[in-house]
Length: 378
Image 1: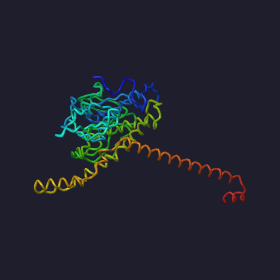
Image 2: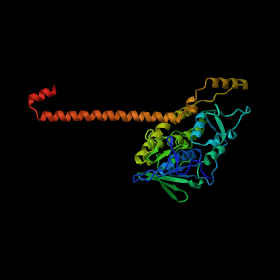
Image 3: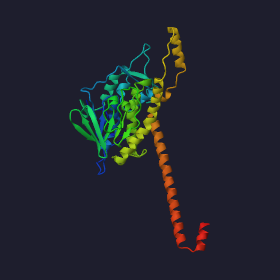
Image 4: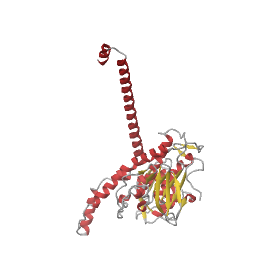
């Protein structure tokens, strides 16, 4: 099936459709490896493919399963997850035909009118297989390699090498780990031997050796708390694209270079980490706090119902999660970085002028009489 990522040779950059540029001598980023073909892995491939033609970028996805099937019964997408899905261009999954409906039959997608693209989304529950299939339709099958169980990965200044159980190896410039709790990136990432924990600690480091980063459960497993699995996976993929697009466009300027060097790779992965890590850590702090909550024995069914109603009325506000805007979070990180760079530039300028003045004062004193030196010191 033909991919619907975009026309070959023309992909989105900023607000323009640009032709792929000729390769340059210092072209660095040319091949991205993705480990895991679940929702996070497919979404990452879709997002990065939007800049593939500009960079002449090859993206390959490796999955340990012998066939592409998404396990699990259902998955929920909060309003921000639905919006991210739309921004990725996966319109198939937005069809009301694919959502679970309650007895009321209420539609999950409400558009204000046919004449405006503005949409208001409700939290929507899909069959996981439907969402996975909708994402899969946007990924060319020739770039997905099955029965590729990852044993370990090596990363250094020259790139990343993946070693598979079947004895084969592949080399790339960067690796995105999307293989969840089963990840085998032990040679490329710091690790300890832990017992299985499906609401585990977030990875303390999201970027390893400037070549490897993680998305979804590989970075922040939380066992589906607050129905955040899907939105977090899509948000990670979208943030990764925002970071690399920013490096290409340089704060909104046209894609003039058409390549990303090693410093650009480091910068993009750092921006991605700073965009997503605070949000995911906030979620995991809440999840871990709930693990310490003791179960309380309830009374009759009516008492249980009343207790449940009171808990819902006094429950925490989760709008920070369901309405989290990845683009705004990324823009905030970029502003912080701009302010940091500006402050550093000012400091360097002041330091330069200080040493310049000190040098010239010293020079004048060396060529002046004692009386003149006393006057200079005053």
